[in-house]
Image (cartoon, rainbow, N blue to C red; front, side):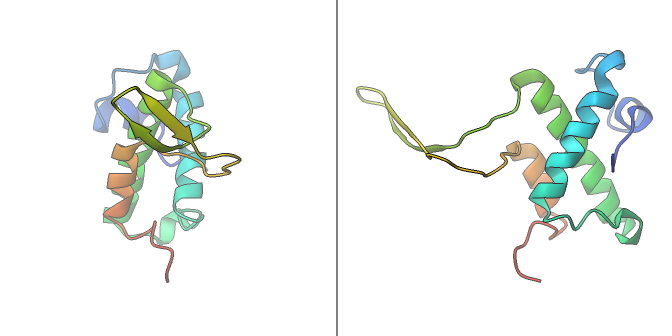
Length: 116
């Protein structure tokens, strides 16, 4: 399910980053990542409060813009250091990374909490 449509992106979110012809594609991809980040608790979208629905839509728009601007991250940094530059990546991670701003919106809803 796509939680924010092109009209919401343009009129409510005031989005200008994603070209109009590509908005639907990025909103769909972002919605799928939001489903994963919320353990599919967003699937019953109409049962969420108006506040939760709005935060989910905002998270989708933020994630769509992040995907458009930076691509989709497929791995996670395990550690890094600055002196002599060293980066370690998590091997074989199946974690789907979501942008920090999208996670911040979702955290306001408690939909990302692992404990129910």
